[in-house]
Length: 199
Image (cartoon, rainbow, N blue to C red):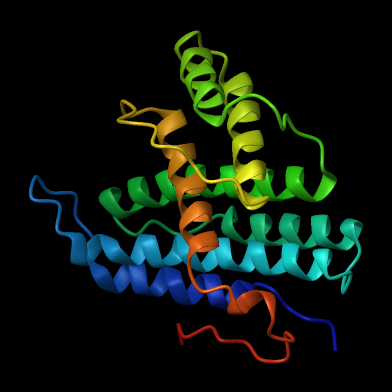
C-alpha cells in the first residue's frame, strides 16, 4: 500500500483544534492558545522531512518526492472556513511560513541552490529585497537558505527581523532547523503506521 505522508483528514483535525482553541490575539499573547499553530507547523515540517528521508534512502524517486511535497502543500493551502478574524490571521501567517518549508524541500530534492554564500548574508539580502518590494527575490533567497538547513547546515543567529514577509518565511526555516535538531526517528520508521495524534 502506498505510504501517505499527510492527509486532508489530518489537516482538518488540526483546523478543528484551532476552532476549539478560540484563539484571540491579545497584548499578553497567551502562548497556550497559540501553541496549536506551532504544533501544526511542526507536524507539517516533519511530514516534509519524512518525504525527503524516503527520497534519500531511495524508497521513493525524486519525482515522487516532489509530487508528495506538492500534495502536502495543496492540502495546507486549500480553502478553509473562517475560524474568527484572529485565528484566520494566524493561519495566513502560518501558511506563509509553510510556503518556505515547501519550496525549501523541493529545492533540496532538486539540488539546485547556492551552497557558498554565508547564510546570514543570504537572509540580509532577502530582507533588502523585500524592502525594495522584490518579494519573489526574497522568497527565492530564503528557499535556498531552507534547502541548506535541510542539508544539515546550522542556521546562524540572525537577530531580530522587523515583522514582514521575510520574518514569516524565516519562521518556517526556523521550524525546519528545530526539527533537524530534534527527534529524527521519522528517518527510520518504515511508514507503515500513521502517528497522527490529532484525532
